[in-house]
Image (cartoon, rainbow, N blue to C red):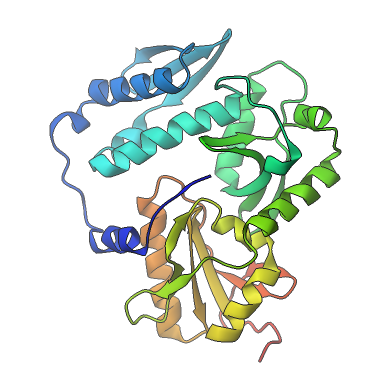
Length: 298
């Protein structure tokens, strides 16, 4: 998957955090629905899209129908850049969770990766897939920490396809081996954490390049040891969205407050939110951080 932008874009988002003034057609549900319809039909030409009611859209492909609620999209479209991102996210999610798309992508072990989602997203995806009577549609996923879950994917230049149980046979792998390969591939793609920069003088560090797999690196605790050495321990990390993580070293109150605030802003503003729960790094993995906790690194 691509990366897009970087710290400058993130700082613009933080600086602009204020109630957005919506104007023009972005306040019109019919206009927004039409934008979404055109985006879906561009990416999935065989889709039949209808709007049975003002705040809902039905997408039928190959005899299967998925209903999309438009309430959250309308809220995001109060700011046009967010509207574009949200429409793109909805289309990608539709392709992933419903097995839609061109239908000719070849599954290959070299393209296996993993991504993170929260429990709410996973439950919604599971319900959507449950409407398909075909066997083997269950997602290959597992809990990680807090409300974060690992979801396994097949990575392609234009998006990710979620791995379902029936895909294991196509790959010639059992679930354990598939997961092992996905983690190995992710580690090969990221032998180290992406470059990081400090946000202002707050003592909060963030990855300086917008990377789709940024939060996924929580599953590779060995990558975080150099950062813990640089910033100090406990190393407290936030993964509010999939493409950015934030970190502070030590548990000074002012740094934790700044970390929570920035994570909360990014969580609310992004179209791929994950969690606002703060996590603490240990050499064997992450755990939920709590004030006064120690990981034995001091």
